[in-house]
Length: 364
Image (tube, rainbow, N blue to C red; front, side, top):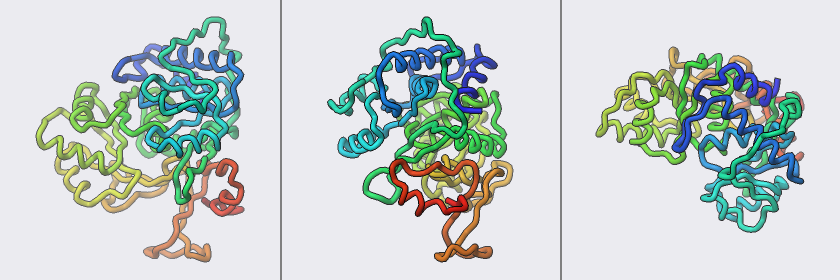
């Protein structure tokens, strides 16, 4: 199975169900399929390289562009629109990007460095494109190249395969019991692995509905939770702190929430305590990193240990080691090592750094 095959399966199974709601659109899964095929057709008609940039906010077009690029047999490279011009140019040049899908708002950030700037505001026609011409890929091929700042001066490209993403989703679906009945609110920027996994690929794979917010706002989040009966929210601690302040002054019906998960940075105890007193569902904390395709461990809503990042996903192994690489006993501080089908293929063009990060027997 690949992300393309999973996407097409969902689009056929839930063709007439609302798939994505953003500030401009409410579209079905069949709408997503047709628009993604149109994006693929547009790419196939151009003479482009293998790596295609996506410079977009959270919106329906991000979804269709991501899958359209994969359908064309290319590799999506989500671009961080918060980077400085110099950092963005570094990523573009390092990845060898000659084509970027963007909108009129972000287009000026690209300057004159891109040969093909494709505007998502222009409608693509999929007339004459047969589904059998779509390239599903295979599970070991790259499904995305995600750039992470990590600990070095320049961002590093993390190579993630279809298998990496799908295995991580399997673990998340089991842990959180996601189904097509869920409605997720996407507030984190989709260029980040945490958001890309939990607010795009995951809901698409289970046939859930995604509501996107292009720019985070505490009052808007609470309004959308009530309006669209949101069941799940993934965010960072600073966002939950804002939601707490908002909830004190503005009352909304938040009873449909069954999961609020925190990641990306440590969750302060005062935020956890206040959230659990204010909201109808406990705030759970997890841990992950781009090199492990987003999620490593999570607290389960029904079994949550405050101050912990929870047990690892069911299909992963985790151990704590000392400076010499030996496994440590309980209650000892050391380095987290992770092993499983979610571990990246490596850093793009950085074999030395890859070898320093992943052991010969597969531990990250």
